[in-house]
Image (cartoon, rainbow, N blue to C red):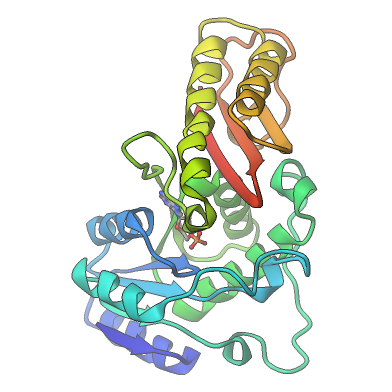
Length: 281
Ligand code: AMP
């Protein structure tokens, strides 16, 4: 697998592939790769002849008090994993390559980026939308893949691509989970053994709520029961446990919903680790 660190080298390689008639897929990541990331590469290989992964821990999407400095990093292992699954190219720029001195442009998305993660982490989606827009323009791939694990992020990116007419197809990939159901995440590495055991309550609570709402139960009751189950399992602060419209993430309920395309999204703290997950109803 080839590794490039500049936009010019990335563009030159992608240009050559496209000139040879090959379709190119981009898979943006922040590294600390796991099977979830690798499932995106594999899905990319279904949609394109060439896959480009990027690894960039984007300082602009972390607030000053968040885990930018401690975020897990390990490029050597990431490179091995990417090569093993047959990824063709890694784009791993440094901060100076992504943000030239005087950088002063931002992509701000209203509406879908405002509730949930947007409310809990006000800096987050501006940083994500800006860096993903840059990566899409830099790579000029025909396809880009993002995980449903970060469901609201996927909706925000789809909005940016529609609104800015970016010539790329955005594909969402299902969430890869551990055998007990916990969504794979780079941040799971922060969990102690005890916390890791308790974390299974997150997908379990989502599943229970999804079944209750699908069976005609009240939204407010499913949300309250989900929060209570997390608290009982040892979770601390629950930022949200919400049943939402699956496309624009507007509120649903409080009563039963029939025929709505609904998604349940959760963010909750286990010790010092913030976990997010979501499930379709
Ligand atoms: P990250 O490195 O956490 O920024 O994630 C990079 C990409 O991988 C994003 O599109 C995520 O949604 C996706 N991703 C992360 N975890 C998973 C997972 N468990 N299953 C599927 N995709 C995932």
